[in-house]
Amino acid sequence: INSWYWNLGDGTIITTSANFTHAYSLRGTYQVKLIATTTEGCKDSVIKPVIVAAYPNTAVSVNGNTTFCQGDSARLTAEYNPVYNYQWRKDNTVITGADSSKYTVQNIAGIYKYNVQVTNTLANCISTSGYTDITINPSPAAPYISTVGALVFCQGDSVVLNVSNIPGYIY
Image 1 (cartoon, rainbow, N blue to C red):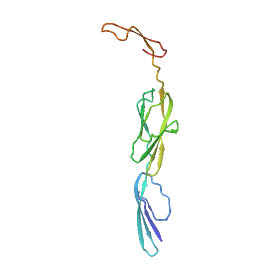
Image 2 (image 1 turned 90 degrees about the vertical axis):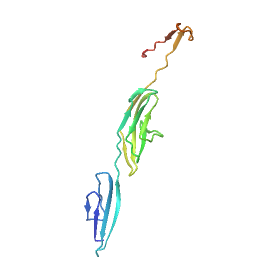
Image 3 (image 1 turned 180 degrees about the horizontal axis):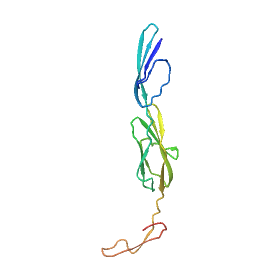
């Protein structure tokens, strides 16, 4: 082969080498064309698509509060793309089965850090989100209600209800 003519599909033309490295700055599919010429002037060409995949956007939005009581929940959402795979983590531990763009946080009381790893399956481009801090406050113990009198009575009668005073509770 006497010469090479590469059209890299992004406006770049290379005529100096059979082997080189080229960085594409934008994602997309590029039709790369090579024309090889022999010393006798014979030519042949080939076109190959080059797919440049994007790194996923891993911004996480929260539907609900990041601080809530045990029994409530918050929904974490990453941008959906059908070619992406998702894996949610809690405190750097993979959450089994949490592999969609949305994850609902429901847990026991505590402070947790959630994030998501998103993989663009076109080229295995992986991005990991920052942490979303979630605080789940413990549910209060059910107060004890005592009664003076019958709990079943006729209209116009009454019953006395008492509750023990537990510090921190508002009645």
